[in-house]
Amino acid sequence: MEQTLALIKPDAVERNIIGKILAMIENDNFKIRHMKLTQMSEQLAKTFYAIHEGKSFYDKLIKYMTSGSIIALVLEKENAVASYRKLIGATDPAKADDNTIRKLYALDKSFNSVHGSDSVENAKIEISIMFGD
Ligand code: UDP
Ligand code: MG
Image 1: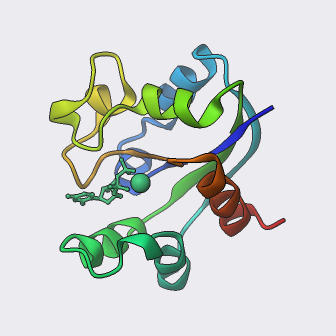
Image 2: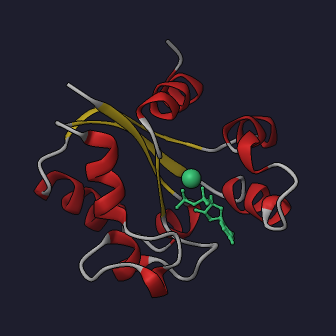
């Protein structure tokens, strides 16, 4: 069964909507295989988001992702990667479909409440970064 790495980001943890987001994940028939409340160190955030190094939003992203607690999850479902990307919606909530997590809860394109792996290959890498092998 396919797995993906999900994060509930600091803006959502701070606004007490962990439960609402987990309910959407469970209602969409994902199985939660691992879950932890943690905080990213600067080094971990830089490893996790290495692909974005050098982009205009990179420094802001690292500051944001290390600013408070996050929830890290390993989710399992058939086609988990694509299915979870569909559930979270577009990066920018203004462009996200109705009833997606980001449409409902994201503040803007930067503080967008959740992360989801974008490929099966990256899911494996991100699960290993957040949970080890
Ligand atoms: N981000 C941002 N500004 C942008 C694009 C992205 O602040 O113009 C942040 C946002 O938090 C996003 C993360 O960087 O979720 C990673 O960007 P990516 O393009 O990978 O979007 P995602 O895969 O999260 O939809
Ligand atoms: Mg991405």
